[in-house]
Length: 69
Image (cartoon, rainbow, N blue to C red; front, side, top):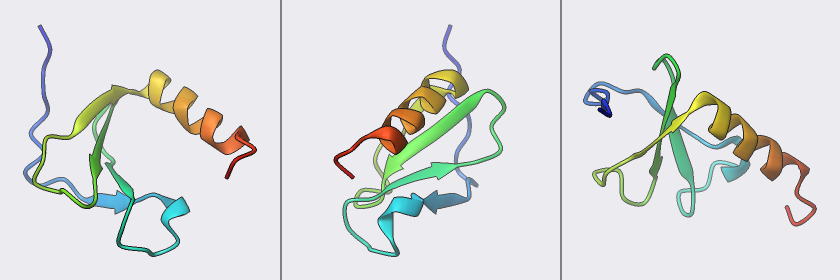
C-alpha cells in the first residue's frame, strides 16, 4: 500500500538551478521522512511526484555531474 503524504501545508522551494526564474522549474518540499515531494512550478495545483530519498539523491547527483548544464 502506497501512502501519499498530506501536502496541503507543504513549504515548497524552487531548485537552486532555477536562478530565480519563474518558468521551467521544479519545486521540492522538505520535512517528509524518507520522501521527496516534487512538483512543476508552472502547475502548482497539479499532482506532485513522490520519490524516495535514495532515488531522488541519485537523480540529483546525476544532474550535478551532467556536462550539459
